Length: 138
Image (cartoon, rainbow, N blue to C red):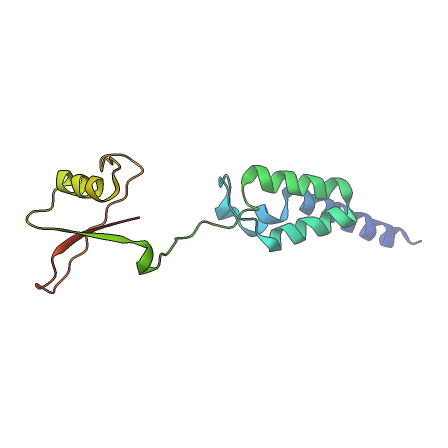
């Protein structure tokens, strides 16, 4: 075998190993670094699996790097609900946190605090004057 061919093959193998060492998800989706959980991205799993199939050690390293970086997970999204899954309670007068908390307690029997970090509030402007204010919750 010619020495140029040997060098080319050696460089190709080294380049293949090097690419597998940094993992597919880390190369393709660097913006995903830091995710801790979620649904697995099938494309990244397949690419890492191909690396595992052809090069055992680099494939294992690719999976380990993608899991530790969080780049193997799909980015989070938003959830949507049907209108039947949302409870609406009418509140008359000025809408305050205390009135909202009381209305939720009366409807569900559970105490909530709108001051907690896990609670998300959103104010929407409704232009129709015929509509009363209402609180929506799950």
